[in-house]
Length: 337
Image 1: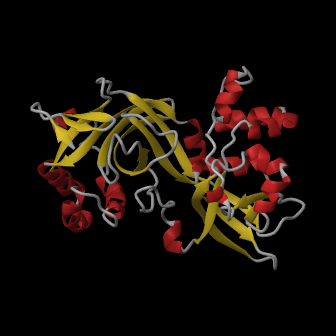
Image 2: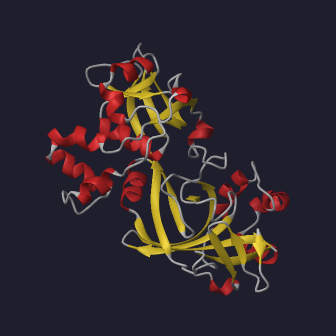
Image 3: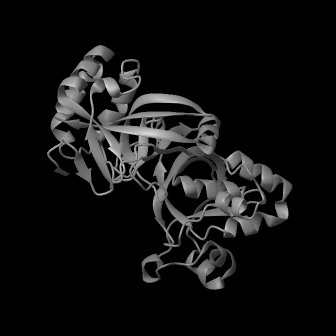
């Protein structure tokens, strides 16, 4: 990371402007112990120069909030994250881990397959589109025997693919049930196209949140396939066990550590390196957020200097927040002195 004489740090897709701690809105009010769990996760796969602080971070996990705050102010320096052009306000969206019912084998109710990568995925780039997967015998033959599980609703499958992972309560052929996690294992290398944007561009809806999209689908069932095929990207999964300990955290993000609900964000790694503690403020229809978060993930839509995707957790409440969250954002990177 280069710097200039004024103390500004340059990243490939952002610049960091040094500020005083007093400029961080709400810094004295956050419950830092919640964020410390996410910070400990980052220390499982630390990136330089944050790695040098991890022994102290671990020691402070049992400290009170004031001690944690004092330590941060002594060891870190806050920088306002801006675009190269100097813009310091960006956008916050949300994502979550879907929690769905599934069947190990196809049934009359569960007909929508979730696939592991086809064996010939690397030999054909890009691989078949979503529409071709549904219609071409050649694509279907390549996916024969590759289904991990089956869902009841193709829109739930699309949501799962967009979020990149999920929890399934899966019914086995003998009728027994258990929880598993599906983790991201690759894509067909086709471009991602937002089904919400497709609906907006055609003037079919005004509310492109997931609740809005599902409401439109309920009124227009014959057009469901057309909507699904508007996004050519298909995501493939791998199955992971979901122990009680695993179930307390989210899936692994791009940093390679498990995500913490409400304390992990996906960022553009060209703007903020993985593992960086970040002060985040955002205010809008879904409420005000002023809190310490950790940059632990990324996503194809998360590009730009002041851009973050907030990991809301799992379950119906997280799904609702993530589906509606779209509001202004400011970020401060907290970097070792």
